[in-house]
Image (cartoon, rainbow, N blue to C red; front, side, top):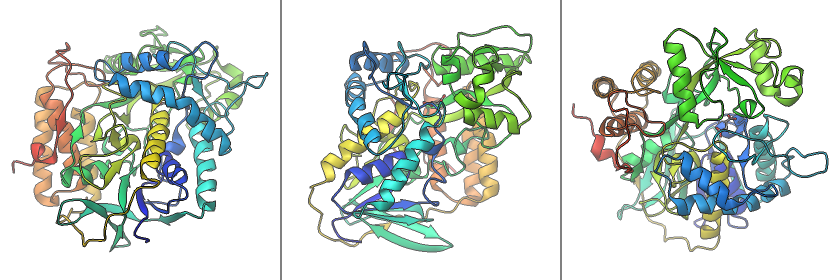
Length: 492
Ligand code: SIN
């Protein structure tokens, strides 16, 4: 690597958009799988929210973002993503993303929950993530300033004597290799794979957050995990998604008796809890798109249609069984408005970062928006920055690898105790179980993050946004959680 290269760990939307925007500064992108194969971005169905329609305004978008976040969104950051969003959509169009158009050629806008107006740009109905990633991968592979290294998994941050981050240690086929960079940017994605029921790819295990926490980075709001209300409940792992845009088109939520039990466009946490309650009560929950979409299903929602048909459900004529599933992590590595973390030399972007844009409950389709806005800002900051002098750097001891059987146990524990409805007793029990397992596995990036999530959820004795405690059903004064790995260190 050149001494002035930026090292980007992760090759989803945030990582690749940052790499492209850094031009002409050289950068190296590490991907744990062939490009596009392990990234949640490619699975995004809904699209990207931006105030582009006549009559819409970034201030209205920011207001909806703040309202959805249940008291914990920083209004300045909401304003920033809302105001910079339209320009980033134009960047994606310039990269060849074929967003859907109206018959008169304007960008088509769809409605999703808790948006006060239609403002989500999509591609072929539910294919936005795939189309965006296809365009970015093509551009990144052709860009002379980008070097892509596939099939390497980052395990630990390298730090020099001053504590500054200088790169990462990776593993491939049992061999460790170190990659250094003038600045290291984590774009490692989400955590859904830590739950037994998730819409995320299996590789989304929060490894980047665990690595950063183990190195001493400040972590914010790890207890806030968003559960998508309408994963398709056909026993698949990961669970296929039935995009919220279906409800935006008028699809209804009904129980087995055909009764509607919640307002379809209520905030995501409200809908997820309502579905959870119907299911727990044995009444079942279904998304009924028969009259709202009907025969248009294959053309308008091809991904959802294919997922339903492969499970033996024809959504043109049958309601779709749905269940909440871990979908998005609002918490993460604390960053400022330019993507800097609390560790010198380390930035974070995308789902692994906590920018204060999402609070306790992310507004639908704001995640792709946040990823591109902050990737652009980090590129602006780093494009011409000076490289630090080369210094020797080492990882912390470990971390240990996580045995597959431990992951299976941890996913079951998180699903049982840290899901849509939580209790203090359940969270305390989960912490004990994780600590007991760590006696045999040792500390892993994933177990570090799980302890952070559970510790913060136990300490938050209130209900707010996606964090609902049946033993503390009311909200108390708004406060954010800030903690380091030391706060959740195993007592065993
Ligand atoms: C969806 O299509 O429902 C998901 C969109 C999002 O998570 O923002």
